[in-house]
Amino acid sequence: MVRVLINAPKQVTRGEAFDVKLLISHPMESGQRRDAMGATIPRDIIHSFVCRYNDEEVLRAELFPAIAANPFLSFAVVAQETGTLTMTFTDDHGVVQTETAHITVA
Amino acid sequence: MLALPQAVAREKRSGYQDASPQTQAMQDDDAANPGFLWVQQGEALWSNRSVPEQRSCADCHGTASVAMRGVAAQYPKFDERLGRPITLIQRISQCRTERQGLPPQPPDSDALLSLSAYVGLQSRGMSVQVSIDGPARSFFEAGRALFQTRQGQFNLSCSQCHDDLAGHRLGGSIIPQGHTNGYPEYRLEWQAMGSLERRIGNCMAGVRAEKLAPDDVALAALELYLGWRDNGLEVETPAVRP
Image 1 (tube, rainbow over the protein chains, first blue to last red):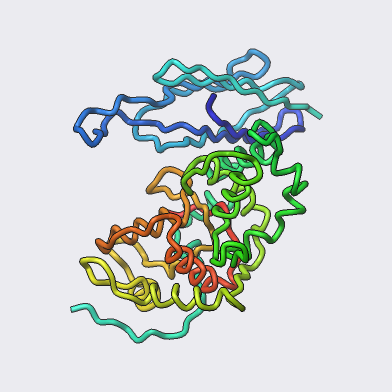
Image 2 (cartoon, chains in turn green, yellow):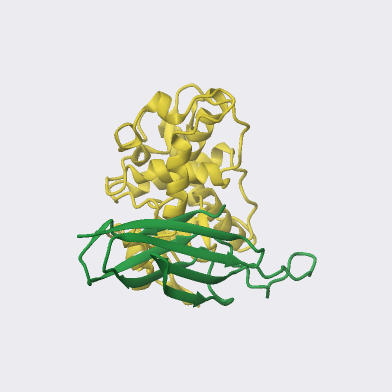
Protein backbone atom coordinates (compact mmCIF):
# COMPACT_ATOMS: atom_id res chain seq x y z
CA MET A 1 0.00 0.00 0.00
CA VAL A 2 1.16 3.45 -0.95
CA ARG A 3 0.37 6.35 1.37
CA VAL A 4 -2.00 8.86 -0.20
CA LEU A 5 -3.29 12.21 1.02
CA ILE A 6 -6.51 13.39 -0.60
CA ASN A 7 -7.81 16.89 -0.16
CA ALA A 8 -11.33 17.44 -1.50
CA PRO A 9 -14.20 19.41 0.02
CA LYS A 10 -16.85 17.26 1.75
CA GLN A 11 -19.62 19.60 0.63
CA VAL A 12 -19.82 21.48 -2.67
CA THR A 13 -22.31 23.66 -4.58
CA ARG A 14 -24.11 22.10 -7.57
CA GLY A 15 -22.45 22.98 -10.86
CA GLU A 16 -19.56 24.85 -9.25
CA ALA A 17 -15.98 23.72 -9.85
CA PHE A 18 -13.98 22.55 -6.83
CA ASP A 19 -10.36 21.52 -6.44
CA VAL A 20 -9.17 18.01 -5.72
CA LYS A 21 -5.59 17.74 -4.48
CA LEU A 22 -3.69 14.51 -4.19
CA LEU A 23 -0.28 13.64 -2.76
CA ILE A 24 1.00 10.13 -3.42
CA SER A 25 4.06 8.74 -1.66
CA HIS A 26 5.94 7.06 -4.49
CA PRO A 27 9.67 6.97 -5.40
CA MET A 28 9.00 7.77 -9.11
CA GLU A 29 12.30 6.13 -10.06
CA SER A 30 13.10 7.45 -13.53
CA GLY A 31 14.97 4.43 -14.91
CA GLN A 32 17.89 6.72 -15.86
CA ARG A 33 19.90 6.36 -12.68
CA ARG A 34 22.57 3.80 -11.87
CA ASP A 35 23.42 2.24 -8.53
CA ALA A 36 26.87 2.11 -6.90
CA MET A 37 27.80 -0.93 -9.03
CA GLY A 38 26.84 0.80 -12.26
CA ALA A 39 23.72 -1.26 -12.85
CA THR A 40 20.63 0.59 -14.07
CA ILE A 41 17.97 1.06 -11.41
CA PRO A 42 14.79 -0.16 -13.09
CA ARG A 43 12.11 2.38 -13.83
CA ASP A 44 9.30 2.49 -11.29
CA ILE A 45 6.85 5.32 -11.82
CA ILE A 46 3.12 5.74 -11.55
CA HIS A 47 2.27 5.69 -15.25
CA SER A 48 -1.45 6.14 -15.26
CA PHE A 49 -4.05 7.88 -13.18
CA VAL A 50 -7.82 7.79 -13.62
CA CYS A 51 -10.41 9.71 -11.65
CA ARG A 52 -14.09 8.80 -11.87
CA TYR A 53 -17.09 10.47 -10.36
CA ASN A 54 -20.03 8.09 -9.91
CA ASP A 55 -18.58 5.84 -12.64
CA GLU A 56 -18.16 8.69 -15.06
CA GLU A 57 -14.57 9.34 -16.04
CA VAL A 58 -13.61 12.92 -15.21
CA LEU A 59 -9.84 12.78 -15.61
CA ARG A 60 -7.32 10.44 -17.18
CA ALA A 61 -3.62 11.20 -17.01
CA GLU A 62 -0.53 9.50 -18.37
CA LEU A 63 2.56 10.18 -16.28
CA PHE A 64 6.14 10.05 -17.50
CA PRO A 65 9.63 9.98 -15.96
CA ALA A 66 11.10 13.30 -14.77
CA ILE A 67 8.29 13.76 -12.29
CA ALA A 68 9.76 14.09 -8.79
CA ALA A 69 9.13 11.57 -6.04
CA ASN A 70 5.89 11.91 -4.08
CA PRO A 71 3.90 13.44 -6.97
CA PHE A 72 1.27 16.10 -6.34
CA LEU A 73 -1.79 16.18 -8.57
CA SER A 74 -4.37 18.94 -8.54
CA PHE A 75 -7.42 19.26 -10.78
CA ALA A 76 -10.91 20.77 -10.83
CA VAL A 77 -14.16 18.79 -10.89
CA VAL A 78 -17.79 19.89 -11.29
CA ALA A 79 -20.50 17.87 -9.57
CA GLN A 80 -24.23 17.84 -10.32
CA GLU A 81 -25.23 15.31 -7.71
CA THR A 82 -23.89 13.72 -4.52
CA GLY A 83 -21.45 10.93 -5.17
CA THR A 84 -18.03 9.37 -4.80
CA LEU A 85 -14.74 10.30 -6.40
CA THR A 86 -12.77 7.17 -7.22
CA MET A 87 -9.09 7.66 -8.00
CA THR A 88 -7.05 4.77 -9.36
CA PHE A 89 -3.35 4.74 -10.20
CA THR A 90 -1.04 2.08 -11.57
CA ASP A 91 2.75 1.86 -11.30
CA ASP A 92 5.45 -0.06 -13.18
CA HIS A 93 5.45 -2.86 -10.60
CA GLY A 94 1.81 -3.47 -11.48
CA VAL A 95 0.55 -2.10 -8.19
CA VAL A 96 -2.99 -0.79 -8.68
CA GLN A 97 -4.42 1.29 -5.88
CA THR A 98 -7.81 2.91 -5.56
CA GLU A 99 -8.75 5.72 -3.20
CA THR A 100 -12.17 7.27 -2.71
CA ALA A 101 -13.62 10.51 -1.39
CA HIS A 102 -17.31 11.19 -0.77
CA ILE A 103 -18.73 14.48 -2.02
CA THR A 104 -22.09 15.86 -0.93
CA VAL A 105 -23.80 18.33 -3.28
CA ALA A 106 -25.75 20.97 -1.41
CA MET B 1 39.89 36.58 -3.33
CA LEU B 2 36.91 36.17 -1.11
CA ALA B 3 36.26 39.25 0.99
CA LEU B 4 34.86 38.28 4.36
CA PRO B 5 32.39 40.91 5.50
CA GLN B 6 32.37 41.91 9.14
CA ALA B 7 30.14 39.68 11.22
CA VAL B 8 27.27 41.95 12.12
CA ALA B 9 24.36 41.40 14.43
CA ARG B 10 21.48 40.90 12.06
CA GLU B 11 17.87 39.91 12.12
CA LYS B 12 17.19 36.19 12.45
CA ARG B 13 15.96 34.92 9.14
CA SER B 14 14.24 31.58 8.67
CA GLY B 15 15.32 29.52 5.66
CA TYR B 16 11.72 29.95 4.51
CA GLN B 17 12.42 33.59 3.65
CA ASP B 18 15.30 32.59 1.35
CA ALA B 19 13.33 29.83 -0.41
CA SER B 20 11.74 30.44 -3.82
CA PRO B 21 8.06 31.51 -3.97
CA GLN B 22 7.23 28.05 -5.38
CA THR B 23 8.88 26.27 -2.45
CA GLN B 24 7.18 28.63 -0.01
CA ALA B 25 3.81 27.88 -1.63
CA MET B 26 4.42 24.16 -1.17
CA GLN B 27 5.05 24.67 2.53
CA ASP B 28 2.08 27.02 2.97
CA ASP B 29 -0.51 24.62 1.56
CA ASP B 30 -0.92 21.55 3.78
CA ALA B 31 -2.54 19.74 0.84
CA ALA B 32 0.57 20.28 -1.31
CA ASN B 33 3.25 19.87 1.36
CA PRO B 34 4.67 16.35 0.92
CA GLY B 35 5.79 16.44 4.56
CA PHE B 36 2.19 15.71 5.44
CA LEU B 37 2.58 12.19 4.04
CA TRP B 38 4.88 11.61 7.03
CA VAL B 39 2.59 13.52 9.39
CA GLN B 40 -0.25 11.24 8.32
CA GLN B 41 1.85 8.18 9.13
CA GLY B 42 2.95 9.69 12.45
CA GLU B 43 -0.66 10.23 13.41
CA ALA B 44 -1.38 6.56 12.74
CA LEU B 45 1.67 5.47 14.77
CA TRP B 46 0.61 7.70 17.68
CA SER B 47 -2.33 5.42 18.41
CA ASN B 48 -0.76 2.15 17.23
CA ARG B 49 -0.90 -0.58 19.90
CA SER B 50 0.72 -3.27 17.75
CA VAL B 51 4.04 -3.03 19.61
CA PRO B 52 5.65 -5.57 21.98
CA GLU B 53 4.34 -3.77 25.10
CA GLN B 54 0.92 -3.25 23.48
CA ARG B 55 0.86 0.36 24.53
CA SER B 56 0.45 3.25 22.11
CA CYS B 57 1.83 6.78 22.50
CA ALA B 58 -1.76 7.95 23.04
CA ASP B 59 -2.26 5.49 25.94
CA CYS B 60 0.26 7.43 28.05
CA HIS B 61 0.25 10.92 26.52
CA GLY B 62 -3.38 11.25 25.41
CA THR B 63 -4.34 13.49 22.53
CA ALA B 64 -1.28 14.78 20.68
CA SER B 65 -2.77 18.20 19.91
CA VAL B 66 -3.08 18.80 23.67
CA ALA B 67 -0.20 16.83 25.20
CA MET B 68 2.42 17.64 22.55
CA ARG B 69 1.57 21.31 22.04
CA GLY B 70 4.75 23.33 22.47
CA VAL B 71 6.91 20.29 23.21
CA ALA B 72 8.98 20.33 20.02
CA ALA B 73 9.71 24.04 20.50
CA GLN B 74 11.82 23.20 23.58
CA TYR B 75 14.06 20.55 22.02
CA PRO B 76 16.97 19.75 22.19
CA LYS B 77 16.54 19.52 25.95
CA PHE B 78 18.78 18.41 28.81
CA ASP B 79 17.90 14.90 29.99
CA GLU B 80 18.54 14.55 33.74
CA ARG B 81 18.82 10.78 33.69
CA LEU B 82 21.30 10.59 30.81
CA GLY B 83 23.11 13.75 31.92
CA ARG B 84 23.24 15.13 28.39
CA PRO B 85 21.04 17.03 25.94
CA ILE B 86 18.85 14.94 23.64
CA THR B 87 16.96 15.81 20.48
CA LEU B 88 13.24 15.32 19.94
CA ILE B 89 13.94 12.30 17.75
CA GLN B 90 16.13 10.78 20.48
CA ARG B 91 13.40 11.45 23.05
CA ILE B 92 10.80 9.70 20.88
CA SER B 93 13.20 6.84 20.26
CA GLN B 94 13.79 6.52 24.02
CA CYS B 95 10.05 6.17 24.61
CA ARG B 96 9.71 3.61 21.84
CA THR B 97 12.55 1.37 23.04
CA GLU B 98 11.96 1.65 26.80
CA ARG B 99 8.18 1.79 27.02
CA GLN B 100 6.97 0.17 23.81
CA GLY B 101 9.66 -2.52 23.62
CA LEU B 102 10.63 -1.68 20.05
CA PRO B 103 14.16 -2.14 18.67
CA PRO B 104 16.21 1.08 18.32
CA GLN B 105 16.13 2.71 14.89
CA PRO B 106 18.30 5.33 13.17
CA PRO B 107 17.07 8.96 13.26
CA ASP B 108 16.19 8.84 9.57
CA SER B 109 13.98 5.79 9.83
CA ASP B 110 10.46 6.29 8.54
CA ALA B 111 8.90 5.71 11.97
CA LEU B 112 11.01 8.29 13.82
CA LEU B 113 10.69 10.88 11.05
CA SER B 114 6.92 10.38 10.96
CA LEU B 115 6.43 10.64 14.71
CA SER B 116 8.72 13.65 15.08
CA ALA B 117 6.93 15.36 12.18
CA TYR B 118 3.57 14.69 13.83
CA VAL B 119 4.79 15.85 17.26
CA GLY B 120 6.58 18.84 15.70
CA LEU B 121 3.41 19.90 13.86
CA GLN B 122 1.66 20.37 17.22
CA SER B 123 4.07 23.28 17.92
CA ARG B 124 3.85 24.86 14.47
CA GLY B 125 3.67 28.64 14.70
CA MET B 126 4.96 28.73 18.27
CA SER B 127 8.29 30.38 19.16
CA VAL B 128 11.33 28.18 19.57
CA GLN B 129 12.32 28.25 23.25
CA VAL B 130 15.40 26.16 23.83
CA SER B 131 16.80 26.47 27.35
CA ILE B 132 20.54 26.52 28.02
CA ASP B 133 20.20 27.06 31.76
CA GLY B 134 21.73 24.87 34.47
CA PRO B 135 23.55 21.70 33.44
CA ALA B 136 22.80 22.32 29.73
CA ARG B 137 25.15 25.31 29.79
CA SER B 138 28.42 23.39 29.37
CA PHE B 139 26.98 21.44 26.42
CA PHE B 140 25.81 24.69 24.88
CA GLU B 141 29.33 26.10 25.18
CA ALA B 142 30.76 22.94 23.61
CA GLY B 143 28.24 23.19 20.78
CA ARG B 144 29.10 26.81 20.13
CA ALA B 145 32.81 25.99 20.14
CA LEU B 146 32.21 23.21 17.60
CA PHE B 147 30.18 25.60 15.43
CA GLN B 148 33.13 27.99 15.35
CA THR B 149 35.85 25.36 14.88
CA ARG B 150 37.38 24.97 11.43
CA GLN B 151 37.24 21.38 10.28
CA GLY B 152 37.62 19.05 7.32
CA GLN B 153 39.94 19.24 4.32
CA PHE B 154 38.39 22.58 3.37
CA ASN B 155 39.21 23.87 6.84
CA LEU B 156 35.90 25.68 7.23
CA SER B 157 33.76 26.26 10.30
CA CYS B 158 29.95 26.29 10.33
CA SER B 159 30.14 29.90 11.46
CA GLN B 160 32.15 31.09 8.45
CA CYS B 161 29.25 30.33 6.11
CA HIS B 162 26.16 30.51 8.31
CA ASP B 163 27.14 33.59 10.36
CA ASP B 164 29.62 35.54 8.25
CA LEU B 165 28.42 34.75 4.73
CA ALA B 166 24.70 34.13 5.29
CA GLY B 167 22.68 35.88 2.60
CA HIS B 168 25.53 35.62 0.09
CA ARG B 169 25.62 32.90 -2.52
CA LEU B 170 27.36 29.55 -2.73
CA GLY B 171 27.10 28.59 -6.38
CA GLY B 172 23.56 29.59 -7.30
CA SER B 173 22.03 29.14 -3.87
CA ILE B 174 21.62 31.63 -1.08
CA ILE B 175 23.52 30.59 2.06
CA PRO B 176 20.91 30.44 4.83
CA GLN B 177 21.60 31.37 8.44
CA GLY B 178 21.34 27.68 9.25
CA HIS B 179 18.26 27.73 11.43
CA THR B 180 16.71 24.44 12.44
CA ASN B 181 13.13 25.52 13.13
CA GLY B 182 11.56 23.40 10.38
CA TYR B 183 12.95 19.93 11.14
CA PRO B 184 12.21 17.24 10.30
CA GLU B 185 11.74 18.82 6.91
CA TYR B 186 11.04 17.85 3.34
CA ARG B 187 14.01 18.72 1.14
CA LEU B 188 13.49 18.78 -2.59
CA GLU B 189 17.14 17.72 -3.12
CA TRP B 190 16.41 14.56 -1.08
CA GLN B 191 12.90 14.11 -2.47
CA ALA B 192 12.10 12.95 1.04
CA MET B 193 11.65 13.92 4.63
CA GLY B 194 14.91 14.08 6.57
CA SER B 195 16.31 14.85 9.99
CA LEU B 196 18.64 17.62 11.11
CA GLU B 197 21.30 14.94 11.66
CA ARG B 198 21.14 14.14 7.95
CA ARG B 199 21.41 17.81 7.00
CA ILE B 200 24.39 18.39 9.29
CA GLY B 201 25.96 15.26 7.77
CA ASN B 202 25.59 16.90 4.32
CA CYS B 203 27.46 20.01 5.49
CA MET B 204 30.17 17.87 7.12
CA ALA B 205 30.63 15.96 3.87
CA GLY B 206 30.63 19.28 2.02
CA VAL B 207 33.67 20.55 3.91
CA ARG B 208 35.24 17.06 3.72
CA ALA B 209 35.05 16.52 7.47
CA GLU B 210 34.32 13.29 9.28
CA LYS B 211 30.61 12.90 10.05
CA LEU B 212 29.47 12.67 13.65
CA ALA B 213 27.63 9.51 14.70
CA PRO B 214 23.91 10.09 15.40
CA ASP B 215 24.33 9.31 19.11
CA ASP B 216 27.52 11.37 19.55
CA VAL B 217 27.20 13.87 22.43
CA ALA B 218 29.04 16.44 20.30
CA LEU B 219 26.22 16.30 17.74
CA ALA B 220 23.57 16.81 20.46
CA ALA B 221 25.62 19.74 21.81
CA LEU B 222 25.82 21.27 18.33
CA GLU B 223 22.07 20.85 17.92
CA LEU B 224 21.50 22.45 21.33
CA TYR B 225 23.52 25.48 20.21
CA LEU B 226 21.61 25.59 16.91
CA GLY B 227 18.30 25.33 18.78
CA TRP B 228 19.24 28.23 21.04
CA ARG B 229 20.26 30.19 17.95
CA ASP B 230 16.67 29.73 16.64
CA ASN B 231 15.02 31.07 19.80
CA GLY B 232 12.23 33.43 18.83
CA LEU B 233 11.71 32.01 15.34
CA GLU B 234 8.51 30.10 14.65
CA VAL B 235 8.44 26.31 14.50
CA GLU B 236 7.70 25.43 10.85
CA THR B 237 7.64 21.63 11.01
CA PRO B 238 7.16 20.10 8.50
CA ALA B 239 9.02 22.73 6.48
CA VAL B 240 9.80 22.44 2.75
CA ARG B 241 13.25 23.53 1.63
CA PRO B 242 15.16 23.35 -1.66
